[in-house]
Length: 275
Ligand code: YH5
Figure: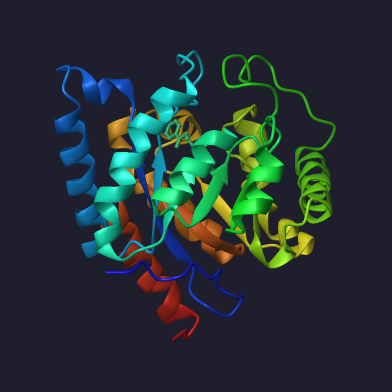
């Protein structure tokens, strides 16, 4: 089956659900790559059955303190998964900052680049322009290793918007069509709880940048700070913020729990008389 093309939903269309498939060294703990591939493929199949519109494949952990991954290692992690999940017929996005990984992933069948470093790594901008696929530009203050050490903003929403506007301009100057660009405020990436809450409250302001908004809030630490719950107990709070983000204009929600988020989207669709 050929994967369908990825087209961003307009203001009057239902938001898309992006399912998160992480391939990290933890999945290789038994030393065999076979299990991690079959695991990821099984999760992807379930996500598609539950209503995922996009599958986001990541081979680099951006959690604070996580080990850096080499280009070769990242390619070895993601390419077999992409090749194996193409059959489900849904667009695949590659969560990477490395130009070489973008190239290998798109050649293997990925149709979108999701970059937490907003194409600022060497050659990433040129590579994304050459590949002509949709790109998500995310805001991050600092680098993953140290980003949560007292992040500072003048006004977090305005600072994030300034950054995203500059990256949109740089992308357009590099030859990336505006229609291919989506933006993401980067919840939890160099932000305190207060910063994250202000960004979510003011998410609608980001629509003024004229690019579809993607958000990743699922199971994040800010939900742990609010509810006092550990990462595997954050489903309810994740669903609450998914609905709030949709109401404030998010066009793509990046989530772990696709089936439950699909119900949330049904509520949103019914309320707004969509489809
Ligand atoms: C994002 O927001 N995030 S990777 C910590 C967690 C739970 C989840 C402690 N890639 C984003 O998902 N891409 C990641 O609990 C992303 N937007 C986009 N576009 C971090 C992550 C996570 C971290």
